[in-house]
Length: 149
Image 1: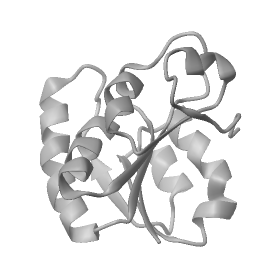
Image 2: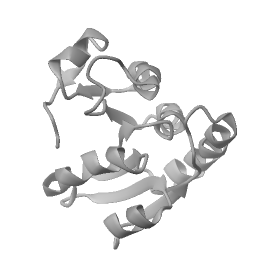
Image 3: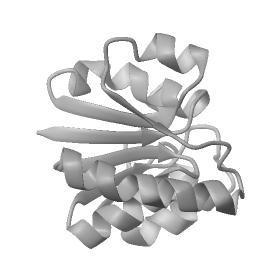
Image 4: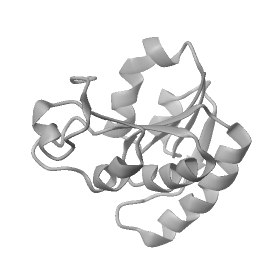
């Protein structure tokens, strides 16, 4: 299986790294932001550098949409997995257009309110996962996988 991980830096990336025992067995490509701490964390991995900041930044959302199309067409992953944030939205849109499966994991620290990217990606996700029972109030069809940290 080939996985395309799409994630913001910092805590979002930190929530995917503990899943290494699962993802290390698969071919993978990462889409995230070029920052020193990200380069260190993903040393030796194949990475496509996305445009940031993405928080309510329409210009970078459009740039990432134009990055998503060639990246997904070239890589042809079996699944796109994201834990947010804003960079996930353009990649989920293009993945749906190309018929690529999507998995979204709502982030660990948003227990009582849904994230903006989660709300946008929820209807596009083939599988939507939450880490807390409280999050299912907003995402009724979500799978509660428990905390990944």
